[in-house]
Image: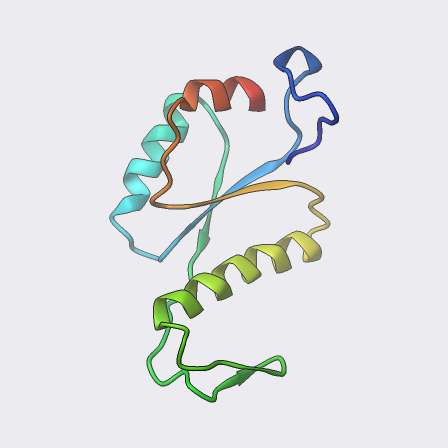
Length: 116
């Protein structure tokens, strides 16, 4: 979670973290995501997702070999999340919330309260 532990009640103050939303460049979902966060003045950043590729069987990346059990979409998803983690390391970001652009939050107002 973001930095406010062990208690996570609103009275403890706002969460100190960044929000990343993984989304493929040019995705039509970006507009809806932006509207949801902007409606509550919640700052966030899009992180450009990585497209999976066909022909991944036997391909290696950083010493790992992909096998036929991973679909191109799964590989792209994995690479996208790994990219966010790398950004956190590179920029010394200790805490973050990471969403994909098809996330569902039942009460975005509550999330907004916790982040402010």
